[in-house]
Each structure stands twice: as C-alpha cells, then as structure tokens.
Image 1 (spheres, rainbow, N blue to C red):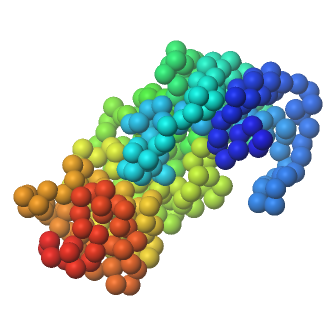
Image 2: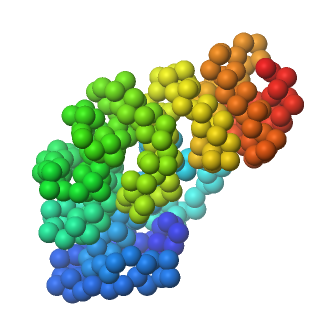
Image 3: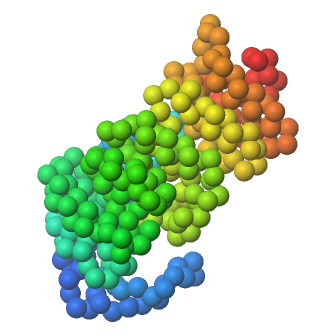
Length: 332
C-alpha cells in the first residue's frame, strides 16, 4: 500500500514491482495467509497469488489514460474525466513512465503462472496479464498468451476460469466469435465484451440478452473477476453501448433500465445511457428521434419518485440537455 496507495504511482513503485516480479517463483511465496484487512474475508491464499494481484494493480494504474477509447468502456468512466484530469508534476510523470517501461519484465515474470496448478494463482496471473498485454508495446506477446489460455477452456475448467479467459482474449483484441456460442451464458457475455468483434451483431445480442435479466447476470460473479469491480452488469452495459453503432440498437433495453427507476444506478447505468443517446450533444434545431423521445419520457415518468433527472444532472449537462424535469418535459 505504501508504494501503490489507492492506485497512485510513485518513483519507488517501478523498482518495487521489479523486485516483486523477481521473487514470484521463490519457495517462500508458497506460504498461505489469511486476509490482512477486515473486508478481505476470502479463503486463505498463497503469498504468490497476493503478489500477482498487486502486480496487476500496478499494471492497471500504469495503463490509466493511455488509451482513451479503451477508457471509455470502463464502467467508471464519465465524460468529465477527460477534461478534469489535472496536469501531473514531474515526479508523477516519471513514476508513470517508469511503470510503463517495466511492463515487459513484469509480464515475463507473470506468464509462467498462467498455467499454475493452483487455481487462485492462475486467476491472479490472468488478472495481471490482462492490463499488461493491453499495453501498446506488448502486442507481440498476445498470440502466445492466447494459446496458453485457450488450453484452459476445456470442460473441466469452471465457469469463473473460462469466463476470465474469454474476457482476456477479447480485451487483447483476439477473435472470440466461437465463444459467443458457448453453452455457458457467462462465458458468452465475457467473450462479447470486446473491445472489437468479427461478429458485432451477434456479440451485441449476447450483451443485450444479459441486460434483460440483470439480477441473474450480477449473480454469475459474486466475487468480481480480476480487474472488474462493481456489479457485473455495469461492465456489460458499457460494452453494449460502445458496441452499438446507433442508440436505436440498444434503445429497448436502455429505456427499460431507466424506467426501472430505483433499480437503475446514476453514474453507471442511467448516465451512460443518456450520454450514448445524444453522442454529439442535444441539438435544439433537430427533432428528437423516437428512441431519444422514449428515453427522455422514461426519465420524466420516474423522476418524481427517484430523483431520476436531478441525480443525473451532470450527465444531462454533458449531453447538452437541461437538467430539470419541467424543461425535459417541455421537449416532449
């Protein structure tokens, strides 16, 4: 925590990460321990698994802001993130670049554990490999890693591991079209998360189907997959909104989510839906499309009981819309 506090990188972080990478195969890393913090109440895990998770956190922090297009499908992204990002001081920039520079060495240390006999170690290694191999300079390692992971997709592997592999392959831009027909819906959805697909309509249909039954979708992973915090439906929704070529493709499901009122979360559901419906900002000179009209009607109809518009004020402004119920109702 001292060298990676809440995701912040320091000039000592890269050297510390290299040390951790160098000792991953040390016998002492086989020692098992319980969670240190009160909220870390899972089963005992090896020191190796814990250190691999930490390497993954370093990699995620190093990748922050590196690929704006990828950042926009993160379930926590908001449109004002791009404008509010403050200038970094020289030490922060040095720390960031140092952590990006050591990613090849970190991945070389992580890769052997992708096939570890310990399932906790395999999952932690995969969680570290996903952000590491998403780096621009490591694309040459992806085919080998993909081949290693494909071997973990057999029937003997459980849902969690197979879904994690599907997500990793998609995150690295590999073709996951075959997994869109998997017998397990969780694997199908993870294969559809993208960011790119050969069969876009099929992938989008898989995501929308999962969003029609969000309670079941959230229940697939009570403990989030590595790198995916929050309810799983948030990630599914962001991927669907990004994959859709027009709002009309997702409108039916999106309007239903907003109309659900209290079950819809402001920054991770209603806001992103609204922003996707008005990608260039609301233009008073143009009539609302049918899909836009239905969406705004859902906001107005649920506002009095849930504060649907008031609680989404920042998103309404980002979409170029007024942020009060009466003004939105006047547009209808």
